[in-house]
Length: 159
Ligand SMILES: [Zn+2]
Ligand SMILES: [Zn+2]
Image (cartoon, rainbow, N blue to C red; front, side, top):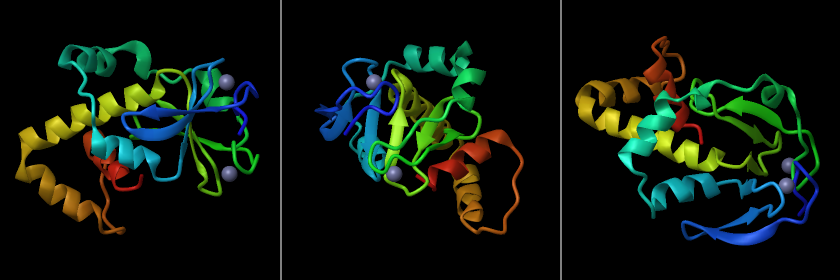
């Protein structure tokens, strides 16, 4: 497989125990369908809370316009991938194959997704049943929601 960003051959590598494909040239990572879920569930490495806070608070969460507009091809089928923002307002732009072959993370984005996720999971735990009720109601497709942390939770059910 070639890197969708710079066309260098991707190399097999282990990321938190999951076999992923990385580009040594631009440091991006290709995840096949389902691998993100595995990485998040395994959670071999915990991030320092100070790092998480920095990421959540940081300017990193502003989407670079150039990035959201540049389209790159899927590493499997070469169809142009769609860009989307992980968790809806995280500011992390990820590329997803329209045929669901996988996801592309530019350098550092995979770590940011994990931090973002850990942060909101911790928040959800703090808020306990209030959020559990909400999470359950969100699973029904006709439910409407407007608050941003809730939108983030919604996104968790779709990856
Ligand atoms: Zn590359
Ligand atoms: Zn594809």
